Image (cartoon, rainbow, N blue to C red; front, side, top):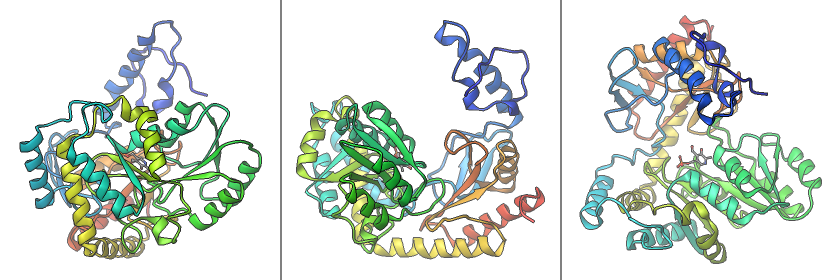
Length: 425
Ligand SMILES: Cc1ncc(COP(=O)(O)O)c(C=O)c1O
């Protein structure tokens, strides 16, 4: 249960986290702002807030942070960005975006259902449908709004959504918005999914992810699909971190397991491997037609910028035409795994391009984050509410665009700081 906090002249930033600032005691909705800012204004200069540091370079193997907390940081080794195939700043993608800017201007200036749909959006949807081998693909402004819109469009009060306990906030928020009953099954645990499904009647949607963003582990898709089918549940698979990365053709974990036809709703984002922005739902034409009217996060929001749509379309073409990008990514992942193992860093159950470096101390992680920055490594602390309390960690993301030297330097800095701080013995 979250505590109520009052404004105070001084508070130890380490005694508080986000859960401390949900409630306040007065009737004024703004009364929470003062205590929160009291904390924030102390946490920032004392180094307990290392978020949203502005970058002045593309998210490549090294980055410059414009205004680091106490320093200007340049040429930091970057192990924080998604950009798994290095496509966000590929020359061809930039050129496609520039050409679209010349042709359409900056924005779509309308909801996709009104005046915001442009030919480039239709081309992108058609290209994705061909790639995913599905009847239809619908593009959304973000990956977040994809899950929110998709889930709330289809599920109703009285229905059941059974989600993995580590499901992304966008799945959780879509479920909350739908007002359906929500239950969580133990992470990647088909037996617990079965237990939960047994206890439900009526319409059921099982929501899972191909690769989990905070632990970098894959879902046991065959077992989960078998259980869901047994109980007549529909399956939503979010491949935000596995689309364009997993599978012989990059069609994700569903392709890897040969289960593309068993999954009812395929979700993905353009913000990870494609280095852009936006999300998609791939499925049947009937689903597409229904979502067009009922996915409120899309209906009541401006369409994706045509500049981004054109860039994403080019990034998709490159991801398809250059399977060597995936090969390079996987060889970098193998290299990173080997180097982390050599240094004795535990990476849990990670099997993907994401490696969690567990710190499990919600306070010390900021001190470590600082030290890493000073030593030349940009690695973002991840704390509650992105992960459970006392499960704080750094998350290493590997890209095909990293050089071996960058990976080496990153791991050496990480291991040195973890060792100096007694986290690694
Ligand atoms: C599993 C999952 N789904 C959806 C999203 C949201 O995607 P986007 O950042 O493109 O809005 C994320 C983002 O990290 C994610 O990890």
